[in-house]
Length: 202
Length: 125
Image (cartoon, rainbow over all chains, first blue to last red; front, side):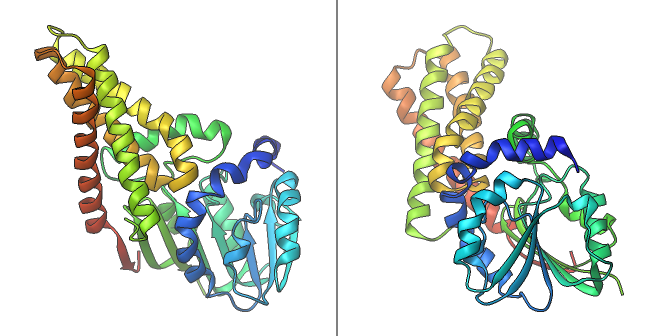
């Protein structure tokens, strides 16, 4: 378990919804609902955080979910209880998934790989637990390749990574490096907020 | 950019607020006769800092990256314009606010056009 990352998110948990649960969540809700509407079969969701994404899940699904922070999952508990299906939430580090190989049909992430310390290793770990041909659906914010936005995001990352996420990750490249096959990228705001659909190699 | 009324108003407000504050502060800090290059760099940095700081309260209401990037771009451009202008002639505080707000609206249009060029689906990455 990466205790530094765990401690960072434990510390952020009590006030996380204040920053992330307002405008950002309202703005992103329709895009998340659209992405998560693809949920079917055995599903792994990471990182569940305080459960802000749960209201955008389709009804009556059986979902396994993980987060590195027990404090985040404590906040999420009331949203888990309100969900119409079932969510089995566990404290787990994406680098050390305890699931068997080829366990899941689909993996969903939501603003996750801005925070995973070793993103390519984390994505390889997801590849291991996904079935061959299994689908990866990501809602992520990433760095930009365009100036001056690239400069701004590099600057903001110096502050933001102390409290939470990096803002300048090249997540799309990381997904490719982890061996996934990219099927679709949908830029929602500039090349910064996007959804990525990829498949695990057969 | 988002077409929902709440976020359209939010996007406009973010650029107006950041632009006017960055413009006002730049015209206040930079004096007539300063080296224009130094003034430009200083005012751009000041404007980006203002945008970065205002992102936190404004972001809670109106979004994350969709607020942060316009706020920082607006701060940078508004600071640059008013900072350089202030080296040539004295600008009163009300004009600093007003011209800063105009810079904010110009940045909103730049972001809107750029976003329309970049956004959308790309198959096979």
